[in-house]
Image 1 (cartoon, helix red, strand yellow):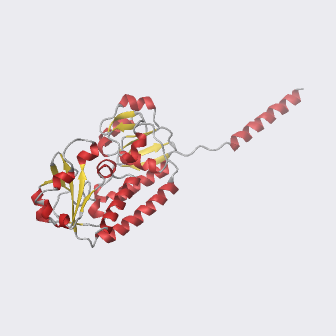
Image 2 (cartoon, rainbow, N blue to C red):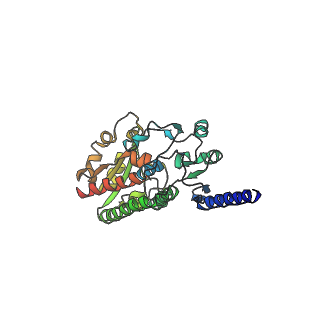
Image 3 (cartoon, rainbow, N blue to C red):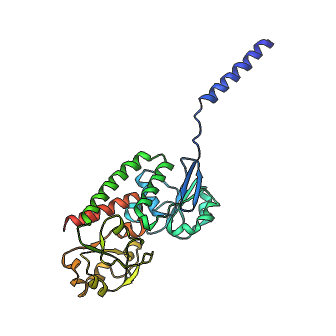
Length: 305
């Protein structure tokens, strides 16, 4: 009996070791380099919160769900997330709400980036703020990071291949389309943006020549007047209606620009005034679907010239 018992214990131990050996190994933690450092993640994260609508747009395109989003005027393209739990505003986190959701990953960028340290104290956090001086490169890099985090590299690569091909085609077309100006309207006022600025992708990556090469780079642009538009006389005028993007009431950009001065400008005379998808440009910006729709809209506008 004693011998039989020893045999049984040995057999059980062998079976246990065989089971352990057959068990799948846990994925190695992933180290993600981002705008404020390096964050180690257990992948794939299950409970994800994002304060950044660009990241939300990319996650939606890659088929990744999120557990919490900021209180914001969600564009139609992200309307499926409007009933998700709210974790604060685009700028200011609700730390109690964040903590209650027990996230495996929190994403910030741009507006919420100053709150990175506080959020990183609650859960692993990454900052996907884009660099306006190399906007497309950093935006594409962020898409690849999210693809890697969620095991969606193949989906990201396929979408980026299409984006890069269509952007190259737009750049070729835009380079011979004359000079361009981008203005943002809000509260009856206007500002314009040049290379290296928040919306400088129009020139640096899409290939348009600026009607004014002297605009200082910056997030808030340079205030301008109707007379300025006529003086610089762009062949193309691209317009972002900020009030429309954030749901504020006021005169639309199209009404603001429809006046005796702007009507004399070359862009107006040629029918080359393009009202950009304001939500894509002002709110979503660097998201995968948003980038593609922006390229598609401008390409279609050039095709009608």
